Image 1 (cartoon, rainbow, N blue to C red):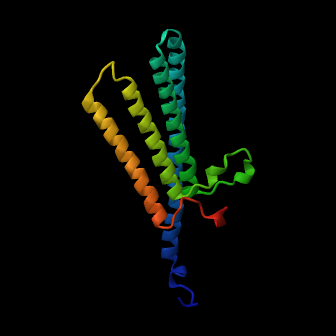
Image 2: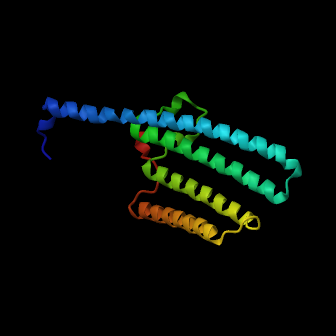
Image 3: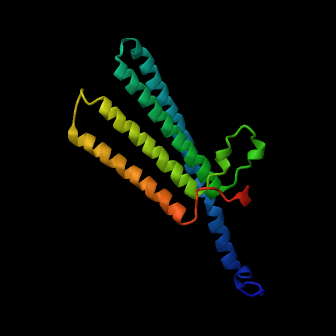
Length: 184
């Protein structure tokens, strides 16, 4: 490259287009706000599940208690997944978050890059999928459907294989899921 000034810096149309494209990242902010609203809806659903769990616990069998706990864990993991997407997506695509103003924030919130985000998302999806498979196995006596169970296990294995392949491709590509340290 030469030390001459670039032509595109003097072209007002191109500068204007670049400004519009750069500022278009803010169009993602309503998506993240929508996900925060969905988190509130999920909290409502969690409350209903918890209330039902508490009401039926005294007369429930041990397997029903375990299934109830797994359902609560499932909803909690989904909430975690939403938070990961909101914070990491906002930080990676919209604007940086200054953790200095929020000393109580978990450290990962501003240190997950796109590769790390993909890995966290897939790991959460695998955990949620595993819970669904475990719930199906625990409920095998009630309504055994071999085809449904086969599909659940098959889909879970696809998630697991995809997660492993993504992690390997990131490692082989030199991206180990760590954020650029110079950013923070």
